[in-house]
Image (tube, rainbow, N blue to C red; front, side):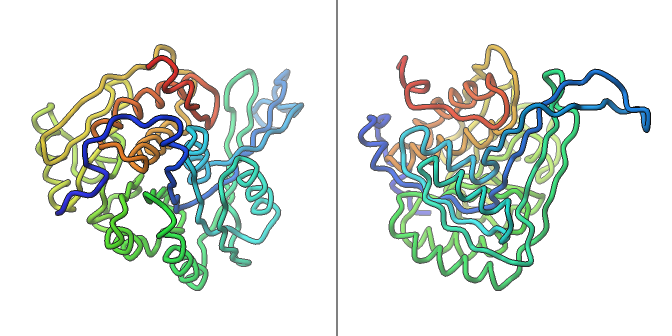
Length: 321
């Protein structure tokens, strides 16, 4: 495979260079709702706590959170996603637009916009309710046409796959992006990674990789399995996020590892979003995968110290560098 601009040697970008970088995020956007309340008693109807809701909060999640991480770092992001034509979709679009992300939403009247409702009591999550269904093929075809139109305006493409059906045509979109010379980064889902063939980088976590290649006994076995998968899929890089073990990038030159930086883990929600968003923003600005890796690791460490789906800012990431 001919190396792309994403793998050419380049130092970390300045704030001004990052501001010129543009990432097209494609995938399953969600609305995260949080209901906070006091828990003072157990229900007389069933052995469950009664939560007296005192505050509500709404945040953008999944692919929308990935795009939010990109703009928080100071780069530009567009979000291409399929949603329903319901109250949640309009709230989601308003929240997305307010962050500085440019939304391109395909609406499917038969689809229910994905919502994750979390009930929080006594500083912990007590319950999560999910509302979702699959988009229609006609809407997905329209999304592919919109993708072709948006592609030339962006430096890199990030596919955020949450398995909700919004990336049914991902193979064709990857092919179009690579033919246009764009770096393609993917947060994968499921056990069949053949659909991600020819991407620049995929970023499975430890458990996700095990679903695809099986378990490993030691580092040597992991290295062999990871490099074999990378070669089979014709990827430039395979980044395995490994929680407390840090993360390891496997590429044609071998591997590079960075240790975990988090001092206190408060909430791991959305940490994978932050890692791939940081990689995409820096690659779009001209960084190599290897140069971007330590900063993506640092960004992940920052957000696990925050509650819920969170982001890392340019100053947090580069302020001490």
